[in-house]
Length: 313
Figure (cartoon, rainbow, N blue to C red):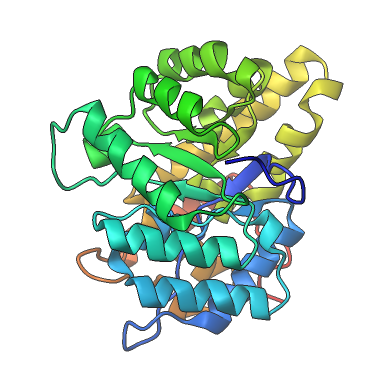
């Protein structure tokens, strides 16, 4: 399957966009579009339907409808990398076809994650059959390695086999292992082959960029997009000490959010700084932050002089 020359590789910082819900727990497409537009204006791309999007609490139909709504609203699909990896093979094919049809730059694909201890052969067959069923040269697959959550790792040997059999289609990976030695091994082994490595957190952004990586796909891109995007864009022009200082500031802000369950904390911050209380809603089984937690979070952020400029407008 040859690579389509019409779509540029996506790089830099992407946000796994949080999904707003209304009082009836339905996806709120209007809020979703507004937040995605704000993120794009801040310089980050859209990894909609990622982990922090509550993707596995959304149906295939809901995801396709939201993706269509973004494109209909004029948001550029070439800056989108929707998550399309599902436990059900047919769901992954349907979502991936929709993303390709709408012109997305690529798809971020979890392995089927319900069955544990499956061999590389089974994971290879899953990715291979999805690619073949979609059957479109425009498809670019970014593997999603998140073993702390999925408990289904993507090995270096599996990446090597997929790259050999589907060059141009297997475009890269998001490494959310939290293990820098694993990210470094991917960079050293596969980046020279044109395989784009994204860190799964801005904590590893600078190290990934210095190793030749593509950027990061990070939860806090939802709330702190511009500073993260600026580091990705300008780090090479800064003194080493200045780049390290900027990285440390990003790490400190992330640590403030990591005191709480991440998805409810992100939504609480958007609700507060965007003056939109409806954003706090999460779908079960998640639970929103309680009043004391929200006060602690906002007090911590205010003490850090944190802001989300332009969000409320």
